[in-house]
Length: 394
Image: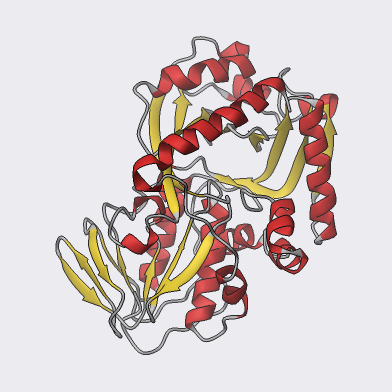
């Protein structure tokens, strides 16, 4: 929340270089998706540029296509400027199970090149095996501008940077209500309230019912992760010789990487409505062992779930309710890069330059069918269709 009369954009190395800014955190820094995510710095948005092109037009696709790598660039600048120790490493690999998946990657490469991104290399089965040692895939695509890191350490490092330039963070202060109709909006928490010249809502999947106007725009969806015991240098490096992060192109995908201490961090699965499965390990272990049979029976040291905010179109949303209350959410699984890009875009808008904000604000959005009560059920039915497509390799 911007409590004083002036905000400014700084030297561009931080999404917002704050002046008189208060951040209200419901739990502690990194408790939500920013600390629990898979640590993959994936360029682009969930919907893909082809979807943007079809739904929003060529101009919007060209504009967004020119920005999809910016979130990762912001992260790299932050890590460098503030010396954040988060094990940042380069490279992201998309993997294909079927020839149809490879055609999808080929189309993605063509479209990304159209919008100025020439950092993607298609990989046949043999080339991919040198980077990801699994027999499950028929090929893939390498994005050299992607990356991976320790997400909680990144969040904590950014919080320290925020405080070092004058920001204030109030933890353990869950927001219960936001008065966005007033000329000077106010945020109410269980511990007190803050009024501000401008409020930015960035609770994403964890905003809950605090702002009823935003409830229909996104739905919390949980994803699950497991982490093995340390595998050792030899075994770990034999699994992912490239030490890059990996994700497949299915609708219900798997994603994984090695940690700095050579654990396999493996994620996947979705539960609509944000509920946690009864046994995360039982859900994910079969997928892990199918990709890497040499890990059969490996010790799992940690398992957890976390929510991301899914929009109906898989396109993130940015806008304003009332006069001085902004929001950004719905990254649909691409929040690591998306939140950094949107944070910077909002900072520009608040400081008076709405050029990029205006484009995002005008993108169409649709509520989930079924309302609050039935949206999870309807979305689950839809996901079954995509799971069927994944199963038959469409």
